[in-house]
Length: 545
Image 1: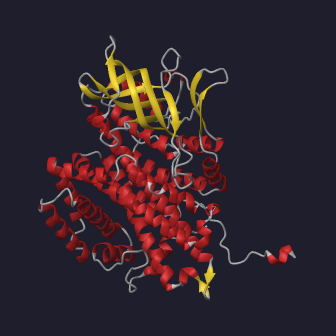
Image 2: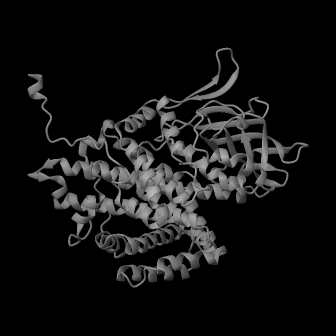
Image 3: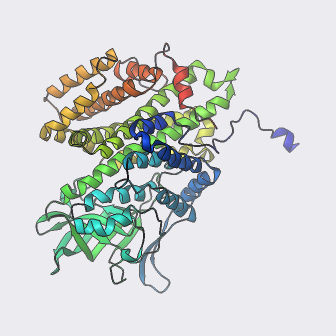
């Protein structure tokens, strides 16, 4: 009787056993666009290998296990000795190790390094997002350390290494690869890091200090070293804090507790205390923000890429479900209203991916023009793409109906993760104000931004009109701070529209410009003009197994 009553029908097969990279048209085309022809076969091969791993049942299982078994803090051993150790499930180490060995901390020293790393980060993050935090900070520590050639020479080869050493803490000189964390935020200051109260007392040896204070958020506390901000005699300064000193003794790094977070459960975020903690100065005293800002910029780009990854996985799951699920006399993907929803979600995902990869390509180019472009484009993209992640993921979950609300689908984990990147490395207001600062202080940044969007002028009348409106907004300084979010949103949309008009298929560019720039759109997903070629947009977003 049980077998008869529990016959399973009209359920889609799991989206598993496929190449996550090759199935993503927006991403594969971005790689082809931004990687030189002589490197293309090599890069496509490495990304396809990673994509096949990301789409495997094994990697998906690792993601579930890492989140079902979050890290645990052991402050003391059985005898009462302070050890400040974080235990992770083996699945976490497998995810992180696979990422490191596939070059996801190695962008700075190889050709097209940022594009190939960003593409890999977008692919592998779809297995599980929490372990992306130490990957991002390890990658981003490189430009901050380069202000001190001696530190860079000692640490950079280990930061960019493709060898994962696991969680064993020992002197960095004995390790082939290391991980970095970061600690800026304090209880009383939040994003206002100049309000930090952690103090740095100089020692006799040049560049050496002892730190005393706390960090309210310190990510990835199992890392080998951290970049932190503290108040030195000359003002707010950046410091390198190793977990283990050169003689093998533990540095004073007291993990008070791990944060109990909404999402990002597999990753350990902590509160830490410094009490006579040895540190090495990075850069000059009083220039801590300027020193660490390059690290922040790189991690902000990872916020864009990470959000694009979450959106891509959510949309892929929604389209896959609709392609197999039947209701009301037909397959969901063929229903006009569901097709409208899926196409709208697909537009959001493709625009995010295309923008994120364009920013990565600008890092690779490393020209004065591209650096100026990044000064505005990174905070604008970080503001908008991360803001769009949560509504996109929530709507994609709804496409699965009640099945999407169940943990086994994986969609709730994506939804819980979705707000993180909007908060991390400066929330929405911080990004908007950063754009205003760049507009006021760096006219070359605005020129580079306008040159970028102007490349597509004349190709779509709605884009042309949006650029004109944006110029009018930029010229109006009245109430500029209160209007900052609206202005930055418009900048991001115009930039996305410009990129899609130049590089996306006509159906995608037309739908984006009609809705996001032309105003023919509602306030919820699934409100695109019915006359558009929505079937082509949806089919392009489908991950075929």
